[in-house]
Image (cartoon, rainbow, N blue to C red; front, side):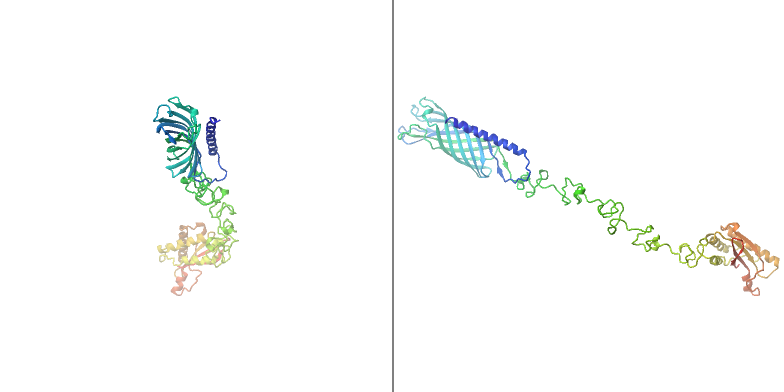
Length: 499
């Protein structure tokens, strides 16, 4: 039964190691559904160890032969498993195969002189003093498996099969992949089976130094926010985040509550409905399409995104249009061009806006045009006793022709010439005819159709002033323009030109 116990313990340790490895593997593959806050800690670890044993028997009690044992060198190798009880204290059971070499100063065979093999099971309480150093303390249980006596006087049955020791020591780099250790093992059990009160007590005395190799186990830094990013690497320790953002949440640059990974407009605040983009404003009028009644036409908030209405369709919106139901012009604030005299010719086209007249005469009554042309014909000059128009009068005739063409384009004219009473009848009639014809020709030259003018000479007939005075005779020497009606009858008004 005693032989089986170490094997069972070794099996349990190995099974625990395998179970821990499996558990760690499954944990690494799982993804917590909720944040799991992790404190700074070490996982269960384990591995192999090898050591040098410097050992001897320590004799106590009756020793008449003054026998003593010197330190000799053996070895040990095995497994270790560490269970953290916090970041400072841990429990570490070990299982080793140990060979102890005992050499006495008495070689006559009365003292044991040889090697004993043990299965050693230290159970150590480890106190960590930082990352570089730890102290160990605990019992060690040794089970004899083989005894080899150089003098063949001692057998396995000559020694206690089970013994207990107490040990204490240090470890260098206790959490490293390689850990160096040393410890002193003080035997508590008398290995002599005689149990004689007069016999010397043989107790193990051992110094052990070696190295441990860690095969599994690790340091787990704290993860204060449970996001899976350890605090040393987490730039946002108090916020759940992601490794790709160094432990910080997915950024939301525009602060619209939609993270940048799903935000189609990460630099503009938007809404979930539009994938993080602002509500669209197709017509760019500053009123988003969800409240814009005219999303394809720029408008104003007052009209729910529609343009200011233009009821009369004159291109001037109703807010500026003084006549919103009548088409007008901007010049008149949306009202029609005024027609002051009500003759159907608006004031801008009406040359006589205060007097009614037909459109054919630009809104002026015929007599008004006659007055205007009369003003243009004033001071038409001829050479003395001749029908030659002086050059300085040509511009007057050009202006008169323009008025006749522009203002009364559908009218025809008589060009009538008159003289004073000086000279013979035939002479004066011929001179007046010639002068009337000269004026008619000048009008034709300035654009009047020849069919519209007929020159007539009346000589000294039809005086309009007194021929007895110089001024009266000057008044009678004249050319008159008479507008002909449709029936080619003379108009009641004539245009007088005083040469």
